[in-house]
Amino acid sequence: MEKFTLDSQERKPASKGEMKKLRASGRIPAVLYGDTANMSLTVDAVKFTTLLKTAGRNVMISLNMPDKTSKTVLIKDIQRNVISRELSHIDFYSVSMKKKIEISIPVMLIGEAPGVKSGGVLSHIVRELKVKCLPSDIPEKITVDISKLEIGNTVHVKELSVPKNVDVLISPDQIVVNIVSPTILEEVTPGAVVGEVAAEPEVIGKGKKIEEGEEGEAVSPASPVAGAKKEAAPVKKEEKK
Figure 1 (tube, helix red, strand yellow):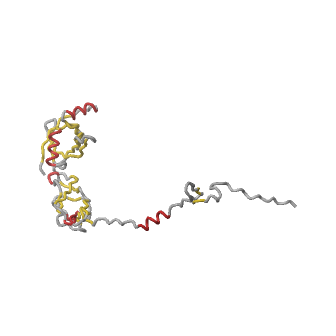
Figure 2 (cartoon, helix red, strand yellow; figure 1 turned 90 degrees about the horizontal axis):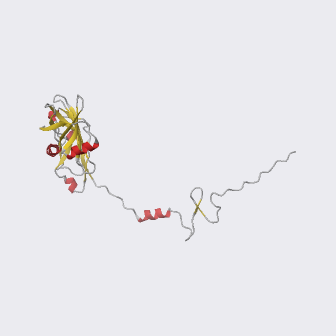
């Protein structure tokens, strides 16, 4: 994997207003995580944006530190403004070139599937592949050629072309992409609609209201009013002998 260089500057604790001015000046707040204490930094917004467009997120960066040293880092997280979508914060983490790390690699589809042209639906299930490898062996992406996929065809993780020195951390039987037949919606028949209408309570007459019993059943006007108390039958007293 190609390594890119990026300069950084030290950042001191600041208020929200000061952070806003910092971003307006063209600097992005960042934090470097690693084996030592975390460090608060800033990087140039234009240079970092160019780096992202050129190499993507899974890029190895030689980060020049304020103390004139250099650290090999990867991008851990990127935050953006909810409205403007401009970069607002970056998390880097320091890596050792001799120690394997876990990272997610984007899975990209190439070609046009004939099954889609025949009316099938393409389902891209695994969009990122979690792997473990040395930082120098991190692939930029994993490609899947779908130019021969017909309806009913499936590509599993075990069928992907992955470098030998890269360990895949998900099940080899996991489906990555497949092409399925379009879902057929059953049309509602007129009889079904009539049945549904018939199930509804019948209106007794125009302008008359339906009274409901305790169980929600229709009660005719001649029936006792729902909820009315019934008179208790008189209790016969036993005669003393």
